[in-house]
Structure formats: structure tokens, C-alpha cells
Image (tube, rainbow, N blue to C red; front, side, top):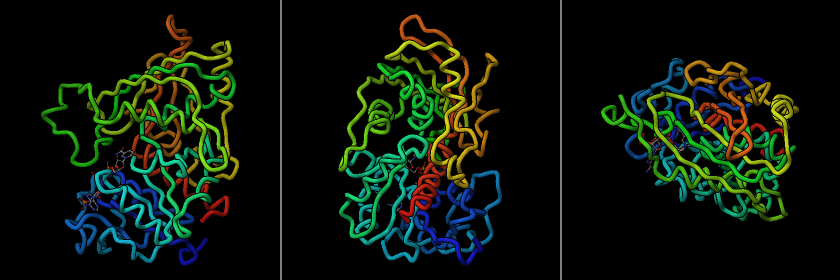
Length: 348
Ligand code: NAP
């Protein structure tokens, strides 16, 4: 696709932690091209390079640096908008865009649990996209990406749910600082420390997986029936959420069968060869000391989940450790994959 055939897109919340990741990932995207960036009234009217505190390792793309930041009003030229808006404002803004006919792909929590909104992980519940046809947004729609910790966990759970069924899941997270946005947690709070609380996080991990792994039923999703218990901690890691997971399965499974289920897992994004799809959604490490965030968070474009330390559990059946990149797979990369799947299915 030449650059003038690419689909123009806008990023809402373009100056934030997720917004910057969108800009990085969209810089050389084969299908989409950023035409507009928007943020709060604090940033609107400024050149993007002056409004943003660019914190990514890759250089700020020159063509984006010179864009003037717009307000998050539904008068943009691009009909596809990626939202990395703060959740205190995302709800009504995203709805206003959808009502004006825009396709909104969002990272914010606000619409995730709406009955007619897909909570999409393209490898898991591509069929849930059918829900957009039941939305009443004058041709526009809202599609959401789950919470950043949920995404890594459900990718590990999906092959187990399909093969053995899930009865109960316990998860303890060690979540990266970039998950708190920018500037996020104060250095004096987190250096030499672990904070055993992330506001609103545990309820998301305990509810979102049930919808994601649920069944599409014409105009809603029937939640999957298993229990999740979550404890979430903030740790002094820049990117990459680590999660210690325990599972109780419905059917007996051996360690080898579980590993095989993970390693053979592949789904629609891989079948369509979507540009942002990981070649293998799941990587399994045999080394006891892996996975680790600093070493493994960028595997397969930061879109794969890394798993290790699978072993029997005396209370549940099995326990293991997972790692996934929170702003890539858990946010901007995940949302981009949703939009790519929508294009592949003729929904854009
Ligand atoms: P962030 O760094 O705080 O960025 C928030 C963005 O929202 C900024 O661009 C900000 O613009 C904009 N904004 C704030 N108030 C606004 C207003 N009144 N009108 C319009 N724009 C406004 O947050 P983040 O970490 O990128 O997170 C963005 C969303 O993604 C949140 O809902 C978060 O929960 C979700 N999420 C984050 C992660 C992650 O790993 N960080 C993962 C998954 C989901 P200004 O710069 O102009 O203030």
C-alpha cells in the first residue's frame, strides 16, 4: 500500500504514555497513517513536539513532531480514532466520536463492560466483533482493549480454557511504572519500594477475563463461569507486567499437555498475518529464572506473552509466571491489532 492509499487515523490522548506508543507503532505502519493528534486543552494548539514530553527510546517521528495538537472534538478528518485518553474523560469523548460515525478503538476502561461493546483480544474472541453491529452509533462504533494485566493473563488462559476448562484462577501481579501513565508514580514512592495497591485494578482482573472468554450470543456476551482472585502490586520496573498465576482446571492435564497447548496456540491474527500480530502469541521458557521483564518484554514486537515456571500447585492444580508488555500488547499494540483485525474482516 503506498502512503497515499493508507487509511488516515487520529490518536486521542496522543501526548500520554499510551498515546506515544501509538505514535511509535504507527510510524511505519503498512495500512494506517497518522493524520491528526489530539489531547487536552492544555496541549491543543501547540505543535506536538512542544506539547509532548517524549519518553520513548525511538526518536519522535518528524512528520508527527510538526502536527498541531487538536482538541478531542468529533470534527476530525480521520474516521478511525485510537484512544489513549485518561479514563476520567474518555467515556463521553469516545461516545461523542462514535455517535458522529467514527470507529473508536479504545484502551480506556469506560466502555469495556458495555453490553454491546467488544472487549477484544484478537487471538481470543475475534467473533465478539459481531457485537458492533448491534451498537446504535449512527454507523460509528466503539471497540475496546482490555486492561493491560488482563491481556497477558487471558492469552495464557485461553489455550487452557479451550482444552481443559477453567474452574478458578488466582493471580498476583508485579506491574510496571509505565502502566500508571506519565508522570505516574512519584520516584520517592517507588524507589526501594513495592506498593501493594493499584486503584481499580483488581476488580478489572477479576471481571474482564469472564467477558473475554465468554460466548457471543447475538446481542451480548455470556460470561464464562469461573472465579478469579487478583492482588495487584506496583514495582520499580519501567515496562512489562509480571504475573504469578495459579489455576484449577476442570479436566486433568499433564505439564506436557499444558505446554503443548500453549506452544500450539495460534489464531486469526496469525492466520491473516496481521502486521502487528506476533508470530507466536505464547513463548514458553524452560529456564527457572525466566521470564524477566527487562530481558523478555520486547519479544515478537512486544506482542507475545512469555510464560515460565510451570509446576504443580498444592492448592490449585498448576502455577506459572507470565510476562507481557503493558504499553505494547497491553495497550497501543493490542488496540492496533484490534483495528487490523477489523480491517481484515471488512469492518473498517
Ligand atoms: P497518561 O499518560 O496520563 O495520558 C493521558 C492522555 O489523556 C494525555 O494525552 C492527556 O493529554 C489526555 N487527557 C487528559 N485529560 C484530558 C481531557 N480533559 N481532554 C482530552 N484529553 C485529555 O495515561 P496513559 O497511561 O497513556 O493511559 C491512557 C488510557 O489508557 C487510560 O485510560 C489508561 O487506564 C489506559 N491504559 C493504560 C495502559 C498503560 O500501560 N499505560 C495500559 C492499558 C490501558 P494532556 O497531555 O494534554 O494532558
